[in-house]
Image (tube, rainbow, N blue to C red):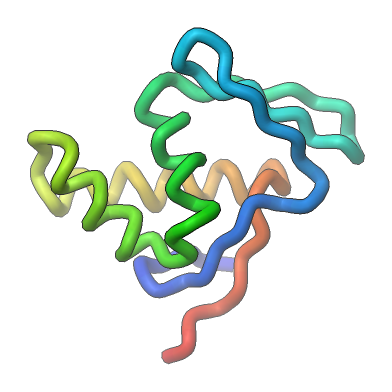
Amino acid sequence: MTITLDTRLAPSRDTVYRELDGEAVILHLESGQYYGLDPLGTRIWELIGGHPRPRDIAAVLLDEYDVDAERLASDLLALLTRLAERRLIDVEPSDE
């Protein structure tokens, strides 16, 4: 599945998340795999819970960071795709 700026997201129910020293540690319960996110990835993880569309996450990040909007969208979608491939987030098709 391709993730777009309008795809609906949610953290997988099969994950447990903790923040340690500003970085996220995520455990995928089914596989037993641990994953780590740097501080920016951790911020994105936090936003996934309250902002179900990448477009909304990008808007928040553009307010918080000095970054080019196109670069941010590209990097965000790449990270979200990796999280989905590892089954750390649930993805629903966009309403288009």
